[in-house]
Image (cartoon, rainbow, N blue to C red):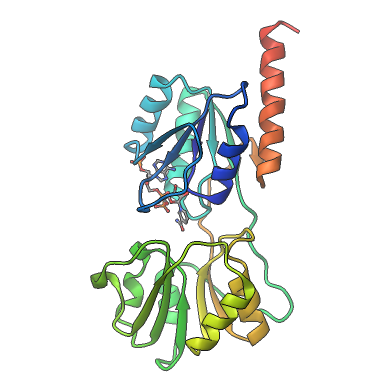
Length: 253
Ligand code: NAP
């Protein structure tokens, strides 16, 4: 089995399967973060080289089960996975984290991408908490606003907007710490992806509790898949059921 990873769910799934004699797993990451969290067992890092490269890897490694547990904004690898599975007839499961939904007290403005988010900032005096990746900062660079920027790895200076304070941290984050950050930096707008999941949700709770506006970048559209689950427990159940079905077929039951 190949697990396309880089998320807490992918990691938990790989850990949950570690030592399970029904599955031999390879865990794959894009190789972008300096010190990635990795599960025990076989790990590979770096792109495959598009759909053709992924097909080649699946064939070389005799992969009979492909699990896409990547981040909801990692649209390219998810599309490549669907296409490669289709080309080779490989069974594929997608672990797709449900999106966050606004609750009473939230002030969300949904935008389609980072450029629209930068345009939506409006008044130059607004102080922004930005929790997006280093490679997505370009549209914010010309903005005169103050930016508190949080990322997993340090961001190279040329990518950063002029007026900023950069911090490195890896979730999960605690609500009181998110409140402290908003207060210390006098933040009045949060820009975030709709990543879903509990690890980074406290920033939205803190924004709600302090009446701060949230500019929410909409999720990209992902291709449909025939087998989809929304959490790790469901993925483990699906995989065990799939194994039982395959084993029964092999026994001719
Ligand atoms: P992306 O735009 O969908 O992928 C870009 C390219 O990176 C892919 O075409 C593929 O290269 C390679 N790649 C991506 N995920 C891979 C994986 N798990 N294993 C091997 N190669 C992979 O993805 P992205 O948004 O840059 O995200 C990269 C990774 O970071 C993903 O694994 C994702 O789970 C994780 N991540 C992303 C975000 C986010 O906000 N986007 C947040 C947290 C974690 P080839 O075409 O050469 O195969």
